[in-house]
Picture 1 (cartoon, rainbow, N blue to C red):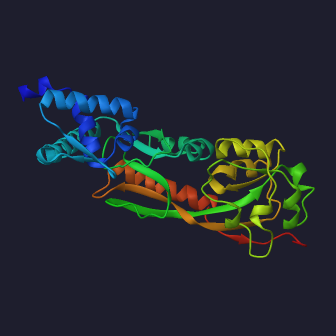
Picture 2: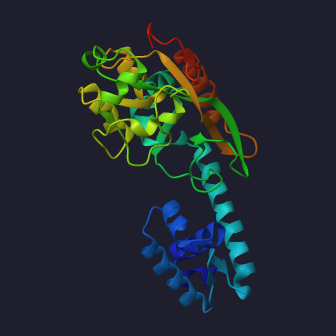
Picture 3: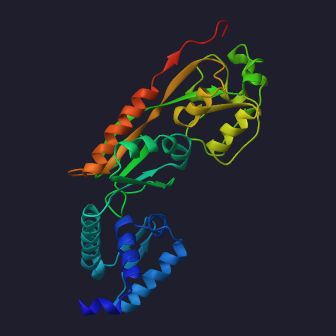
Length: 305
C-alpha cells in the first residue's frame, strides 16, 4: 500500500477513465476537466509508474500491450472504491444523485422536487445537470434521466414516456395563425443543433419543412421557449420544457396537435439491486409523469387546418 504514495491518485483515475472510455475527450467529459488536463495526468501516471500506458490509433486511445493488465486492475480498483463510498454514504444521510439534462431539471423537475422531499425527508436529492451521457456505473451518480432510443449497453433502462413535440407561440401571435400554411409567413425560432426538426411534427403534404422562414436563433431550447413567450415567433417544443408555461397561459398551442418523435425519456440505473432511495424516487417520478399526462399524441387540429 505504501507504493501508492508515490503515484498521484488523480493521475491513476485519469488513466483508468481513458482506458475504459478509449479517448481523452470522453475521459475529460466524465472527469469534468479539459482533454489537456487529462493528457497531463496521463503523463504524470506514466512517469510515476515508469511505463507507457497507452497507444494512439485512428479509433482513439488503447492500453499499451504491457499495460493491459494494469488498466484492468485500475478499473477494478476504482469500481471497488466507488462501492465503498456508496456503502459509507448509505450509512449516513441517504443522498441520491440524479443526472438530468439542464432543461428538464430547470423547467420541470426542480419545481416538483419539494413534494418528494416533503414525503421522503430522509432522502436528500442532488441534481447533476449535465448534457453528457453520464455512466451511472462509475462515480457517484445513482440514476440518469436520458432522452434517446434506450439502447445504452451495460445499464438498466426503463422507458418513462415518448418525447412528444408541438408548435407553441405567444397568445397574440396565435391570433394570426389559422392554418398550418400560415407557418410559412411566421418567424420560426430555432436552436443551432436541435434533437428534432419540423418534419417530426408536420404531416406529409402540409408544408415543406425547408420552406419555413428563418427567425431568431438561440443557443438552447430554454432560451427559444422564452423567445416564444416574448412573442418573437413560433417554436417547435417538447412537453417537459413547455408544460408549465402552457399551464400558466404564457404560450399556447395554435394547432392542438402533438406528435411523438422516435426518442423517449428513460430512467437509467446501474445493473443490479437498486438502492431504497432510488426506488422511492422512481416511484414518485412515475406518478408525477402520469399526473402530467406526458407522452400522449394528439391529433385535433383546429377547424380549417
